[in-house]
Length: 101
Image 1 (cartoon, rainbow, N blue to C red):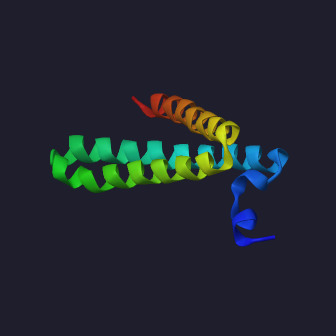
Image 2 (cartoon, helix red, strand yellow):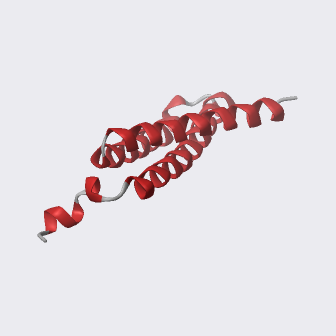
Image 3 (cartoon, rainbow, N blue to C red):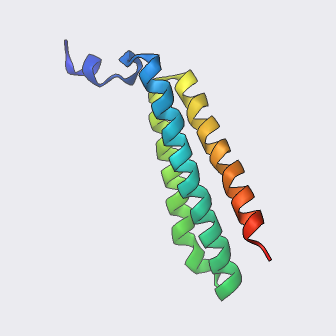
């Protein structure tokens, strides 16, 4: 077995890959939308949009990197990662709506 076969993510069984991608997408979504909330609070609270560039680029790079890893595993794991991100968005929206006065 060569190193290319050992590092190819499509060789992992689906019963292992799909829950990992869903959980990774969920974690990625929570991080992404929490950073989005921090960025929005930074812009609204301090009024300086330049300070928000760091978290913006950071969260976009994190999301892109996470989806890139899911793409390496195939189309179905990518969809499961996307489903995790969307579920995290739904949960975060409900939490933030409940926190509003």
